Amino acid sequence: MTTPQGGILPLASRQAQFVLLRRRLGRRGDDNLRRLLAGIPARIDALATENPGSLIVGCVGIGADAWHELVGSAQPKLLRPFPRIPGAIHPAPITDADLILHLRGERYDLLFELSEKLVVELAEWFDPVETVPCFRYRDLRDLTGFVDGSENPEGDERAAVALVGAEDADWAGGSYLHVQRYVHRMKEWNKLPVKQQEAVVGRTKEGDEELPDEDKPRTAHISRVVIEEKGQELEVLRHSLPYGTPGGEMGLMFASYCATPLNFEKMLARMIAPTHDGRVDHLLTYTRAVSGAAFFVPSREVLQGLAG
Picture (spheres, rainbow, N blue to C red):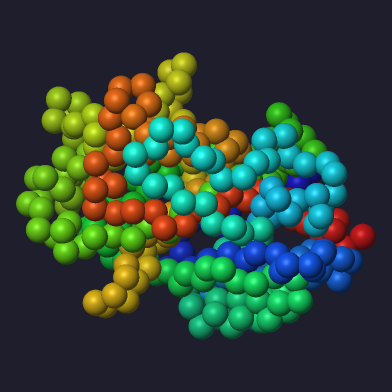
């Protein structure tokens, strides 16, 4: 029996903190680092227990390039770096990151406090390369005004979509995590009439209803990321949230968990490269990715095993 880390399956939080870290040049992982990583889930649990109502949960994920050094020679079957998509028209930059902390809950002060402590303790081995504080906007909407994550699985399906199972039994309970930070062109977006915005997204803005096929362009965001294979829709469990400052940079921190990296890779390819039909996602006219990284989030038992 394996236990997923606590940040994967619970429903959306009001606040989140993403911290991507890179190995320091010349510093190799050792037993002290492994014990530190192994203890992170228990520290997250303790913080939540000490602060009732905070609903603090979180995950630590490890990138492909650091896996052998931190975990060992055995690895998940599909572990690999963030994809490079051939023929891409829109950029999907790759961030040099080896570790991620994804913390979320109802109190940002506690998320900040814990992430700060962990970054300080990890400083002997890792430097932070991107830290993104995020917040829930209205009723789970992106700053574009559209609901984000409408296609998320519900109930027991969340675990079926997000968690590795018997197909890779040694790593059951783990999950493949992909993150991208998008910067929105809000001035240009807000100049569009609502009907044009809806055509770009593929859903109605107010009611969050998918447009009829005859009204939904093949360049709409929904048309690109909703993919069916053998009668089944490819799914990921999204935990994306907006971020930003008034008058400054703002956008979406995209995050998806899945039992396989293939689903995200196929969605990304259909967004940024003219794959099977020569089209790309027109939402990318109004937003651009500025970072991207891939990790495997091992089960609690695998992570605790790092302590020896």
